[in-house]
Length: 227
Image (tube, rainbow, N blue to C red; front, side, top):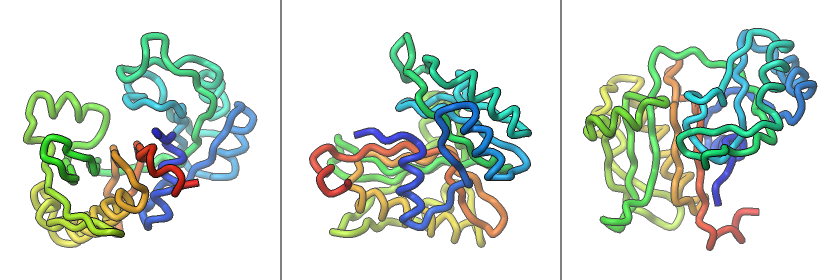
């Protein structure tokens, strides 16, 4: 079962990860009210469809005022949004997620996936987060680093600090990444996920990682455990 971004983020927060403040809306009026309630300096207006690559295809827009948020929401809601990961006619936009925009010096990528060839779970990470990661990885597979995970009943373990070093981090950012990777791996196990991808994640002052976008797929056979 694939979850929408706003649903995935709600679950990640329960596992200790940080996300930008945000609210769901299904009309331009509700989107404007959401922006007013958030009171941010700048907003992201994000179409909620079960597909990635939204930023490149107009599914993620930015606005500086609640009135402009309403305008951007109106241009998305009730329309079909097509990306490289949707059918040609696109997917229907029922909701938009209004979120405070986060400024970050660098964007990263992290995911836990099942390596079906090796028969194990792996943690992936890259210092090059964002929509262009797939193209970068196609040109240079070394852009994405990985480590195997050892699973237990409640969590997963691995060389999180070593992976952080391999994506160029040290000092306090390395410790923040190690903590984030552990949270991500633990959430993957607890949620019975087959895919948990955070792209991009922003490193902000603190230092701390903030999940700007998330993709989560839960094993259909485990849905009875996740109301």
